[in-house]
Image (cartoon, rainbow, N blue to C red; front, side):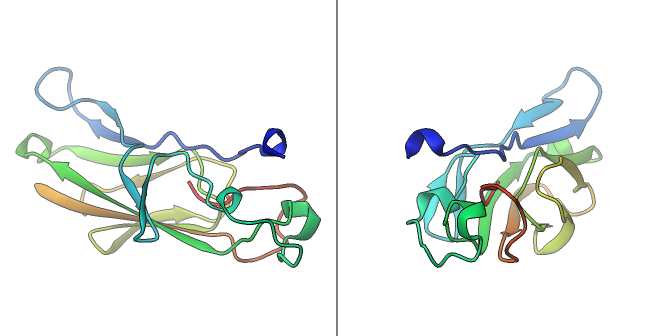
Length: 155
């Protein structure tokens, strides 16, 4: 069955700073590692939490979803910013979050996207500060059936 597991949704989550060349700030940074899923385990992205659950013949997605459970998953990460980032335009870029996502930075909504198969940006410039910044991404794949094939769940 492992060969049939195709993770359609992947994420190249980038932290993007709009800055001039030079200095201590990188223009693009991958932040795929060190996310905490549902306050329990540290994961690297891309991460599909449905595929890690037991197959359930009563799963709401049924055959279309490979009989995998759906629901809501919460991802958290701490992003540490130095003073070098002050005054810079800062964005998070997601290649995909399945599905109906909400992104929060330090408790405030930064954005999200209702559709899981397309990328989106969140401007976090006004929400971050020097030091620790809490990033939370909610992926809500609870509304089933929503696809004709296994969609995956998560980032």
